[in-house]
Image 1 (cartoon, rainbow, N blue to C red):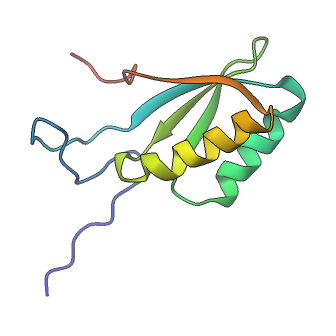
Image 2: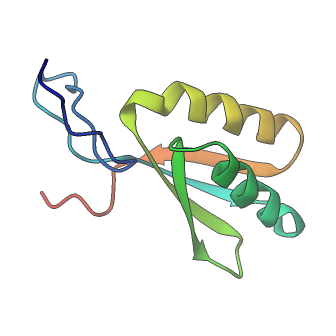
Image 3: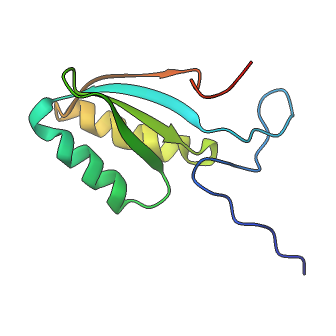
Length: 101
C-alpha cells in the first residue's frame, strides 16, 4: 500500500469547489477580548492541527487564523463557542492574504 505524505496544517490534498487542489489554508480574522487572548491561543495549541493563530494587531487584539480546509467545521465550532462566552467579539472569513493572484 502506498503511503501518502501527511498534510501540514497549512496545506491539504482536498479539492475546492472548482475541483482543483487547494494547497492553501482558509483565513480568518477575529477581535478577541484583550484579557482573554491567552485563552484562545492556549485552546488552539491544545487542539492539534485545527488552526494556527497569530496576533495581527496587538493594540486592537486582532488575531489571524490559518485553518486547514478539512477542519473548518471544527474551527467554526470552537469560534462559535468563544463568541457565545464573550471571548471572541467578532470573527470573519476572508481571502487568505498570502495567496498571490
